[in-house]
Image (cartoon, rainbow, N blue to C red; front, side, top):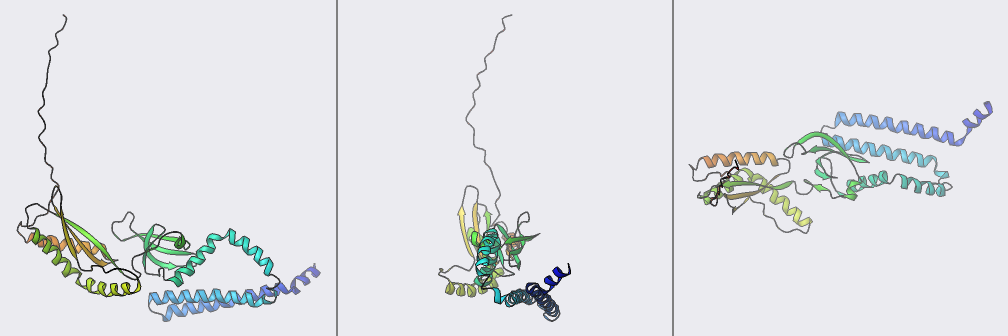
Length: 304
């Protein structure tokens, strides 16, 4: 028993494992101290998050370097064995490996970053964390109307960036186009109605238009894309019941619902000032005259 214990203690590989364990403990302790210092001295939440990510990445890299340094003299002899084992591991853990590759693509390819609003694997939300294996989203929509948080935190595997389209609402152009429709009664002052919609949208969204124009210029320089109309646009179409005005406008991607609320509030106030010249239409139904109905009643006599 003592002989076996002596062989185990003097085994070179065992001491190498001890050295690796000590090195990992030292690295983790240093990373812990650095995270505490970052929480104390870095004030901004975004900067603090990025510093923590850099510290975690540096710690993992240091662990890998320690392992390589300890077993460096044996890497050549283990090359063939590691190749065979690695092939089996790669096949068994292909989803994990592709998730790591997805993380590298996200980090270096400017696919999205923390704070962006995206749609990934059918989930819409704001990116609150990008891990090595998964992206964490604060979900919006579903049972909640509008682009508002519903309270669910969703984690999506990073390999989804290779399988499905990634919709980014805030990457290069943090604005979205939206539309509202307004039904107006026939016989009203259509010109006045269009002027009201245009004036309200211009007054309310002027700051967005100026900022969006400058941003669109940089987007047009980066991508092959045609010019787009940034200013509000009013169009109309007549149907069987009313004249329908459509107001197309641009707004901040996070303020879409609030912008609709403010637009409708101001538009309704302006329509009240027209004294009936412009009135909102509602569904009306006309009963079409039915063809005359002829009844032929025959009297049935009883045999009694």
